[in-house]
Length: 261
Image 1 (tube, rainbow, N blue to C red):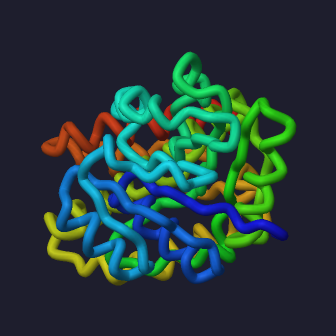
Image 2 (cartoon, helix red, strand yellow):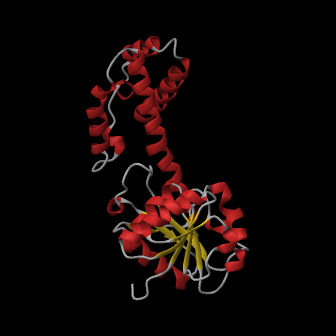
Image 3 (cartoon, one colour):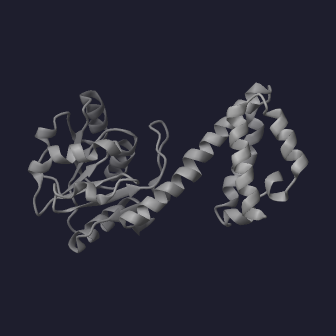
């Protein structure tokens, strides 16, 4: 990038923390970090040599890209409070997978999305070399700057419009949030039966490893796929006193059976 953009980051949560660190490590200047909690803003700003603030009315006008990394429900509200910064040279983006870029419509002229598709936790280092970044803006003269920014921190960059990103986000909930909840259920069942959950970790690793190079539908195994009615009934009998798990078992078993019948 000939002229590196100057970033202003609105937010200091999981996404903002990892994203700001990745930008800093790749030579992109983050001018300012905003959080309603000044301590959080200060702690993050110190790590990347930025200015902290907890006042949206004091956001600098020196930025070229303003990244809004807040809860989905707060994006529009924050944008409206930043409306005084609108201008031809500034681009405003959010990091949400579920919120359309049009949440900014009527507030900013130049807007879009900068969406890193990953699950982030504060206490786990994020490797952006393996994180897809999805960019979108309807302004043709602005998409290049977003793409170049994405490529600066990740080799996996994609131009994804609002509808495609909505599709991705629904799919992501299934493969990440729902699967993790199923891991939790498995852990609970183990604990209730006095079995060490660690015994299942190699199975989890192998399951996730398979889908890195194969289609999930080709890797499915288990009693529901085989139509093993007796085994399924034994499982249901085992779960008879745990209706909250039994219902999920029945629902997923029926769906798998229908898929492979």
